Amino acid sequence: MAKKTIKKSTVSAKSTTGKKKVTAKGKTASSKKATKPKSTASAKKVAVKKATTKTSKVRKSVVSKKDLRGAKKVNLKDLKKVQFEEQFHKCTPPPEVKEDLKIQSIKNPIDRSKIRKFLTKLPPIREKSQPRRGFVLKDALRAPQWNAVALFCNLHTSVPRPSDYSTATSQDVLNWMDEGVNPSNPNIKDFTYDYWNNLSHGNLRFSIEVVRDASKNPVVPTITPSKLDAHAYPEIAEAIIRNNPEGVWEAGGSIMMDGKRFIPCVFVVHKYYSGAWAWYSWGLEFTSGGHTYYVNDFTHIPFDLTQMSLPGGYNPRNWAHPLFHEFAHTFIEGPDLYGPGGCTGYWDILGDYLAPGLMAESCSLFKERLGWINFKEVISGPNLRPRTISLRPYTTTGDAFKVIPDPVNNPYEYFLLEYRKSTGSQPHIPDGGLVGEGLLIIHINERLGQRGKPWILREAPFFDPEYADFSDFGEAMWHGIAQQDQFKVLYPTPTNNSFTPSTQPNSHFYGNRPSGLQITNIRFTAAGTIAFELSINCVSNIGWTVDNKDRGVAGRFSGSSSAVGEEIFMRNDNSAALITQRGGQVFVKSRQNGWIDGWNLGSDNREIVGDFDGDGRDEIFVRSPEWAGIF
Image (cartoon, rainbow, N blue to C red; front, top):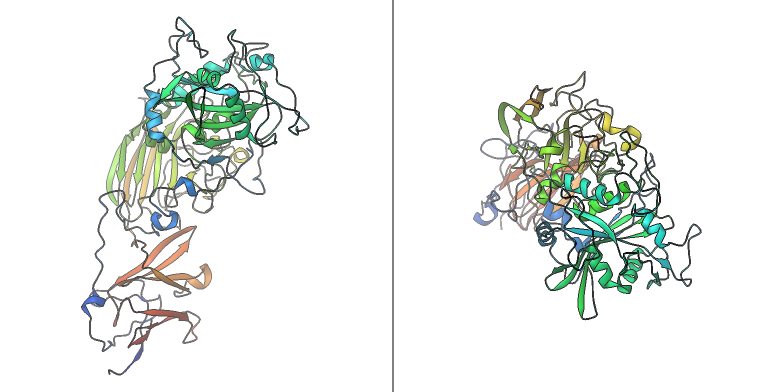
């Protein structure tokens, strides 16, 4: 039997030619070699394949989405269902940040992409010889294809009522629908249709209707929900629908899909206060009168007749902003973009600062995913010579660029470029209330996905507008109302017309890693566009693709770790990497395949960590069946 030897290697942050080393900063690599014979199996190096499909493994500078989310695509069934009361008029964060979006686990869900395509192709709702109880087309320019159905009711006396509860009447419904006393301008139907038609570039054309009797009077049933709870809104909605399923279906547009009576969206309007929230893919399905009904999405809002006074004689209803935000969850299929994971008040409808006259846009990330627009170009690094590019106004054209500085090792962190400006003064125009104009740069981080808990990493949020005036100091400032971010984000400013590694804010990735992106000389043109020069000089980081054979130990291996925290020595059968967590991100500092100095990595290795030489930094004691060593 060969004599067992213990030798001390070191861990290097850089590899050298010949024998590769993984050495901690400040330590000297040993030139001695172990006498262990090289085993073909144990010395075999892993060839990292480039991804050719969405399901292929991709070398990235972060632990892959597969490991952190369980799958490349988020499993909606696993997401926690929580309720969030909207904080629309509060400037401080709630004590516990919760979602206002619920995601239902349905036994037989209808694919949402199929639903989107189906609704887009529906003919407009029109009055026929025997009129349906739906939206009556009065203006040839407005042609809604379906209706979101507002559900009104009164609770049976067996249901405990909130202290501010009041009875709903048919006249209340008529007033709310702008068919009674003091109607608003624009009215509810036109405002809904015009906003969503503009926002979706003609892909989402719907209005609002209520359940009516044969004389077109609103129906307000008294119901007893299965849960005797005034705030059990899904149960309240189900009780209203089951009370008159055909009436709800007709109000929605009398739509048939896959042999079922399909109702795209309903929302409860209750005459007592509670914060609004949405239920994405509610999927209520039942049979009544020989027909199967399927209700896709659900939300709820409190009853409100408050009007806003705007220039031009407009006085729209105040309730439009919470309802349309909840509609955005169900129709745009995105998470809340306030809170530490969103960092925006105004710059997307999924933020927390919009109102009639200040109706927000939806960013190009969501619009492109839904097929409403195509990116003008996806610009990829790691190297790109300077070029001049321009953008037309985003609201009217959908023009947007997606810039991925490191498409090989960090493809899920990138920047969106949009030219935001007011393109009309009507209350329904997205971005119509903007007082300024300019280039909006949004830093996107999809490395932990878009859904679930996008706010879990405040230092590396999913959605983060770059403040051109640096008033957020480069930090994730989520409370957009207090910061009035609609006035401070757009480029250029009088003192800043560039976004580069050396500007404030800078173009670094999270974790203070340079992206190499340079956007300079941002300017308006006589042609009504915004133009700038763009180049990329990105040094692509080392990657590690997670696998079920991975194992790791934590310690303070490098000189910087004593100040900024422990690192992870990650192993599989044939490779090793030093992984760090900085700025809310996990990324690879160094990687080695096959050999570390004189040690041949193998599946039979076992490691423990300790400061074996007393120098204040940790070493790794490694064992195989016949050898031992120290890194």
